[in-house]
Image (cartoon, rainbow, N blue to C red; front, side, top):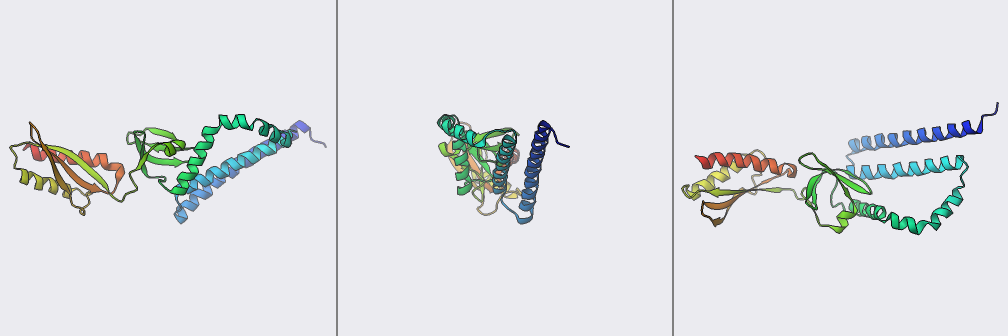
Length: 243
């Protein structure tokens, strides 16, 4: 019994879409398991996944168009004719793609790093060929086109082994400066997250109408929690200075 051509096309299209979906999901599962087992960088895993995903989509679309009777050669020629117009329309996409390749090659930052660009600071949660996703300390998700990293200066706060925690302080004149300075250093050293080497320091900046302006500086390993550490220090210092 001969199958209706329309039904046959529908079956082929359905099978092609289902297989494409399965391949993409299976690739994602295999790459994630590989990352866990062999400790592969998540940035590379995400890039490989995008390569496979878009390749499968293109192949699936090619099969579907051919099955529906579209002349792939004619389409390719047509795309070549309008290539200039498409190139202008997609120049941002191409720029983002190339920038994503350079980021991966330079290894200037990776998934899990804390970066800052254009006044926005957050932890990198996803890196793709076109855009990078970060999450800020107040749980805002920001999507950054990769081309911005080639046009703007950005900071990788995780790149250095240690992160400095600074707290500006006003020491009232009625307090003994040397005693308060030693107490401030002890407070910083008593913090579990505070690095013991280099030791905490207190910098005297200037004399003001209300007291001595100083900065308590200590070091920590987790750049993502610098704001929390500074808040913790402020509470401890307040108890010291109000007595």
